[in-house]
Length: 162
Image (tube, rainbow, N blue to C red):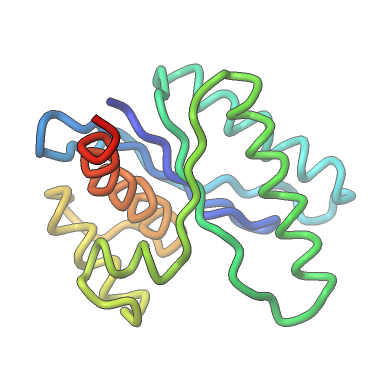
């Protein structure tokens, strides 16, 4: 199973791709989508949409896992984040792949064992869990963590349903 994890943002959208092989997780790719900040919001959202859609096609993504919005400093920030999440949700819909959402605390708990882990702790755990030569950039680490969270939870959900 190939999972694309996304940490959405209108300035930086982190992405992380893992392959789940039995109970093992393999790193495939990670990085950041950074739309031109001088462009109007609709162009930035279009850029994010196109880049996520490209990742889905390039890597034959089977599941998209997205970090839930938890709060924003102000209403304008919350609205922008919601628009970004919406653009990413449409990618999953158009590609006909399942979309799962996880709160930041669920993701931190799954990766570090603590829902209150700091950014540097997350980066170090991602490096260790995926056998990376160095910790990924913070937004990419968060996205890899979202993918790992789903990879850990998905088998349990399957067992409950079966």
